[in-house]
Image (cartoon, rainbow, N blue to C red; front, side, top):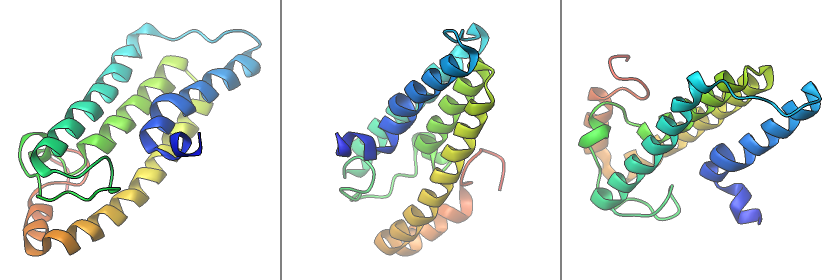
Length: 151
């Protein structure tokens, strides 16, 4: 159970949503209703996370996260647009959850996930630079950390 809870993906897509729904039920004293207009963001975030992760593993080797480091630097596909499409998927999902619940607690969750992934990105970048050196430095200078078009 501890291993399940330690996984960022399990936190974002299972643990935090369950806790948030429970907290909102207690706060509102009834089962919270989701605004259906924002549910596509939940699907988008999760699908982006899964597809980009599968792509990275297929092309770069390694395992989930940095438990097993990548063997090759992936700079194609979604990784042309952003260096962190998987983490961005987590954030899109969290934003969709906050918007669909219309919850101040949901916005706190999004801020927590932003803090978590911002810190994780810094660690990942240091590891990738050690693993891939000048190749990663060149990639980093061309591709934005988060959003396409923003440096």
